[in-house]
Length: 100
Image (tube, rainbow, N blue to C red; front, side):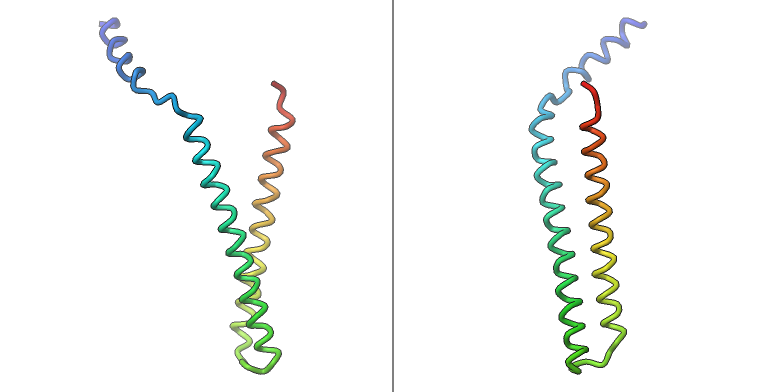
């Protein structure tokens, strides 16, 4: 009986995909694209906040709530981006400290 169960494992082993390197390259590209898009979104929020603030200062709008909400969105997005950067740098430093 034990021999039969070992035979059942061998077809599963033969189906393992050994193209891990190719998959990692696509993951790296998509992660890099994700980071670029996130930075662009943060930049866009900063630009919107600046434009709304300038409109408020110029007297084009009197809605202080929109100004404050836009400023807080931009600030939170920037802080979040900085924390992600710090975590990535910590992970990189930890990997560099590993002994081979």
